[in-house]
Amino acid sequence: MQNSCEQIYSMLTPQERAAIAEIEATTSVLSIVTRMTRMRFAAIAKFDNSDWIVCSAHDIGDIGINAGETLPVEMTLCSDFLTDPQALLLPDIRQSPRHQIRPVVKQYGLESYVGVPILLPDGTLYGALCALDSKPVLFENPDLAETLHLFARLIGCIFFGNGRLTDR
Image 1: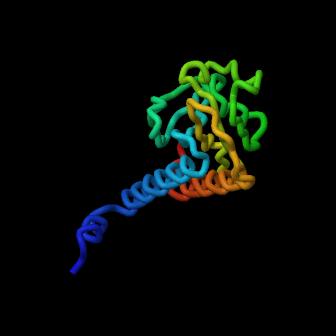
Image 2: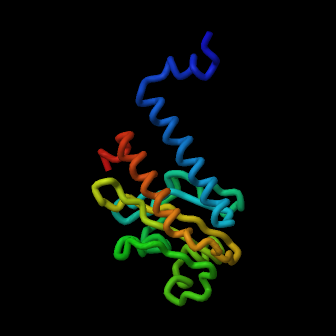
């Protein structure tokens, strides 16, 4: 006899099952990112023309940025990835004159940020995996940037594999 999950899954199309798996996978990644960084917010964001669009968010610190929200990409810290697709670690944003003046920092009272670009398997920049907090956070893990790059690569592969990006 099938359990209730198997019964439900048997009634879903392959596309619906893929969408559910995608949501579960990205939610788990964001939860792990907040634990690894000791930050209270993590998100997957998409760059679309001139906007930064939140695809998924894990907000245990009530930062107030929700899935579906958009900001002009040039206001965000993630905009650095448009010109330099390298990890950006800012344990105390106030120590970075270039970043402390970004409107998003003041709007959400941000003190710390870490982010990496999400690249698709073909090398196209999709968006960013980022974590942030309204308090300074020390990054003690020397492998943090590399681990976040691996998660971002996984996210890019999941999105690409499930066909979510073909009509960007």
